[in-house]
Image (cartoon, rainbow, N blue to C red; front, side, top):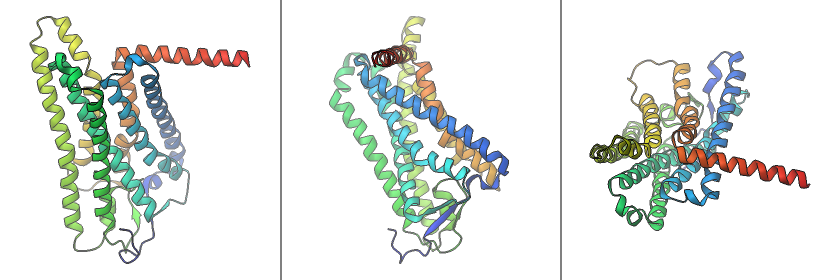
Length: 321
């Protein structure tokens, strides 16, 4: 895939934020660093809470835990490199490292979308088929759904990466982005098959994302139809509150993705495209643990108990030392 007979380019230059005024780069670094650390802390706290509290060992929270794992891995694949380049004058990345970053970002990004779809189906079963929930969402079935989500994400990452890096790169090597992303790399590729690869990869990615989104919409269509049949307002509110955090994350996730990928064609400034790209690489992962923590009452209460226990144990260990 990366053989020397296919390309004469051994490294790329990530332009990223280098076109911005230099005095803004430390500000961007501090802002994105704080958001990145909060993203890691929030997701790790969710994972630790779900893992330690047996009351949360249910399909919904196990899916949430898997979602947090994919989110952490996605940010690790993209943001540390971006932070390093913000304070560095040397922004080159080798061809294998670029391929690895693309594979990781697409794998964990699509895994995230597949897990959101699975969580939508889980909400559908919980509200529309509550008596059959434990049968349809058995531990083995949930493990299979998570496994298939990760497998699907890995396949998507491999397909996209292999398709892009089989192309020839023998001209300019400046990537107009802060990580190895498909559109800016396609602009650097040479060969008659570039338009076909661009068309096929766009079709594959859009089909996968649109398929996930339509399945989520279908799940919520069934959920809304079931909730409207509940006679009491309190019952309707209680039923809807079980999936409102998931719905909010879906809206944020697909809202930012649509802004990025469905923007009208035409002249765009490099700075505007760079800032827009941070919405789904930095902002969306930052908001996700906040939404799940604040909009889910059970998780919020359990996290407070977990944090209290953790600091109590740390204090006891410190006092006894």
